Length: 450
Image (cartoon, rainbow, N blue to C red; front, side, top):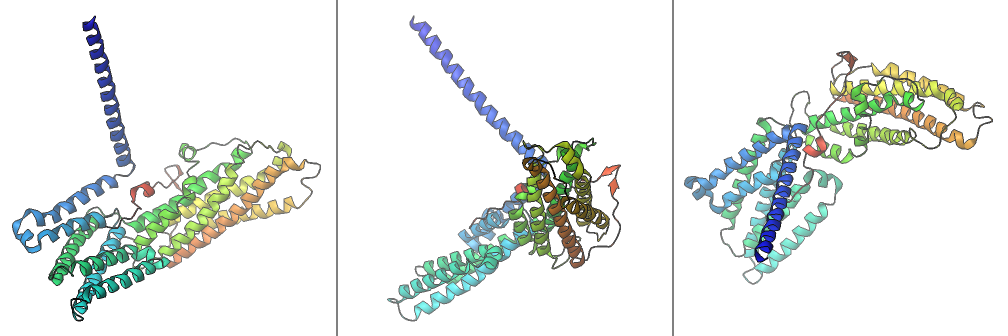
């Protein structure tokens, strides 16, 4: 009997251990699958990981070789720390953080050494009082400056490092007489680490924040056009042959609704980038943000429009038939205009191909307005005409948004000096759809202090 109980206990133990191992293996396989998905979604992530590893390995040599270690000592670790906190996904982000850190360390180190020297004049008794007062004033002033929106957007990391460096040098200088030597070593190692990060990031498969912003804005405009392409036919339930690519991307306009933070993040670091490729020095990055605002306004109206596709309130077919031609025309022409504008931005080409489509959409909108002013709704239940009236109103507003987007794109083309040529409307027999990597997930938008 005892042997049977022992055998049963061993069996249950083996089953429990087997279940634990299967769960552990399952979690590992899920992690591997997720990693593979991230790499396939944007192969630049894999390259970025190798670049960070290379940069850290290079600056680690200060610890591995005695001649280098004797020159810097323990301060060599600041080079490694600098690479870890400075190396970002894009060149602009790395340059911005590197320059912020270098200049902030230089200024804070100089000010900290100066404060330490001045504190020596009143004598040993008043030295801690003077140092404490200087730390209080500088910390309060820098913290308040960080609330300025423009300074926070571009120099918040630099201000944070300035405050940290000043406090470290000022406070540690009270117990360490070699404050000048300490400041020199820290500045040198930070410059070495920052330079290594910038060089590796800029010259080995560089990722440009400006190019990502450019593609993101163009892709967002394209996503709006994809939805509008078949809305009129779908709403009025007419026959329509959808392209498979468009059918799969019909809801991608929703990504536009939450793109503001990504656009601002990319534009902020694009300003740090030097001239590269087709992007000149002082490229009008702010204009991309203006276009992004207009695109989101249009996306909000499209989101409201999408709600009427499966609305429980149905308008009688005879009422729909009266507005079908104008609504379908506005939807299709706005779609073609937005797609051509997206291609124009993507190719950095000043093109007027979208203008005829905008004209046709505006003409259809005027026709619909005149139709709505007539006795169109006579002898019709008011509740039944609300959806049709709302759809008509939203499409008219979308046409207005399309006009504003076109004006902003033309303004961008003028400011950025886009080339003036004719874009081909179709490639390989069907309309071109812009595809860009998942920029929101590729860029690490969170910012750490050290």
